[in-house]
Length: 177
Image (cartoon, rainbow, N blue to C red; front, top):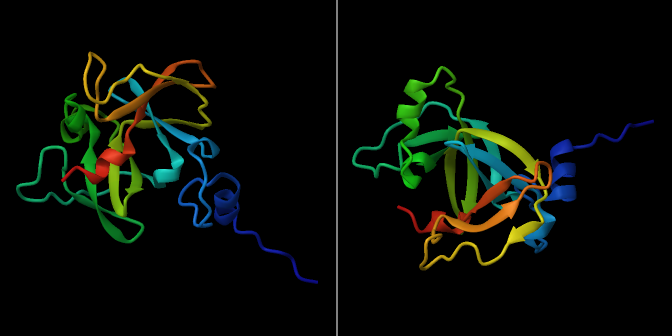
């Protein structure tokens, strides 16, 4: 009698689409949970359909003459990937300064893939993984107005805490160099 061995990661992929669903089926954004992360006291969300992994930031190899929001490269699951410092990109400091000021050096990296480009996005902490279904339409305008932002695509309300979460525009990663 043989026991069936289950692959929990594959089961998770098939059930939720989280962390790199490779089923090949096109699914809507609403079918994926959201990764809610904190950055400088503000909560942001990114749809897990873009997320390959969530890891602690490891050793960073600086790249000469790179832009300020790209502190270097690091290893993720055996591959070298470029890092993106959201603190620097959003104008609220930078990862290396924040790390030196903090006793907690366990910043998280959300590995994201958009349009075939993989990047590690450095965040302060992962707050939650949850479904978000309540979006505030018309609050953020990508072109003009007081709440225009190319980095935030929408505003939503978290289901678990009813707090505001800004939805990170993952598609912008393919435009950054």
